[in-house]
Amino acid sequence: MGESKLAGQFFDAAIGLLQEVRDGDSAEISAAGAAIAAAVANGNRLFAFGAGHSSLAAQDVVYRAGGLALMNLLAVPGVVGVDVMPATLGSALERVDGLAGAVLDSSPVKAGDVLIVISLSGRNALPVEMAMNARALGLTVIGVTSVAYATEMKSRHVSGTYLKDHCDIVLDSKIAVGDAELTHEGIEAPFAPASTVVTCALMQATMAAAAEELVRLGVEPPLLRSGNVDGGHEWNGRVMNEYGDRIFYRR
Image (cartoon, rainbow, N blue to C red):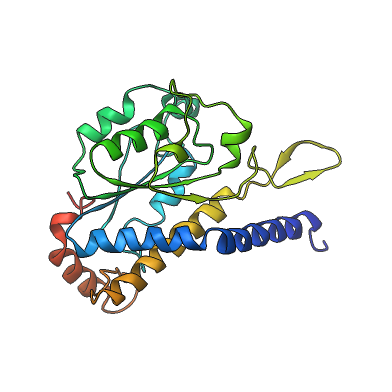
């Protein structure tokens, strides 16, 4: 078989989007990195939240080699992955009013902490209320979303607002409404979503900016190393012992 034309088109689309967010979101990425670095340096904590497939980008920066040890997943039961049965329940829970408040009230978040809220559409009640309530509690909120949805789709929150309206910093993934990059004759639905590729890249770029800012502040970035490299477990043990009071995925 020869090279797939559609596979190549997807790579081209993803590369184009990555270039677009690199250039278009550079100031916001730096600001988000600075906010995260300040929280680390000042003794505060870091959390990331996403529902459905948006949770993949949140999970990508939690407890991983090359990542900040202090990044914690703010989990909402039933919406973090597609393992909930039926899978459609996760989508339904994203539209439930009051769920975000209940989660935050029972979580360890405090004023001064940073919460990254990831939602491609930013229109459902859960991410909107998560950002809204977190800011009311005194957290710095970084939103990762596609701003296009706010101009083309109606909000599902009673306020009529979107995730982007309740954030201190917004990273725009530039993903088109529908999250499908390709069309093809003989295929009725658009396909090949790129939101995970782009959103994960935005998250990792932000973590890199945070590490750079920590060095500027004279703070050694609390990074984890791979457990599959000699010395990795010992390194990680030292980092986790030093920052154990701000790491919640071990408890």
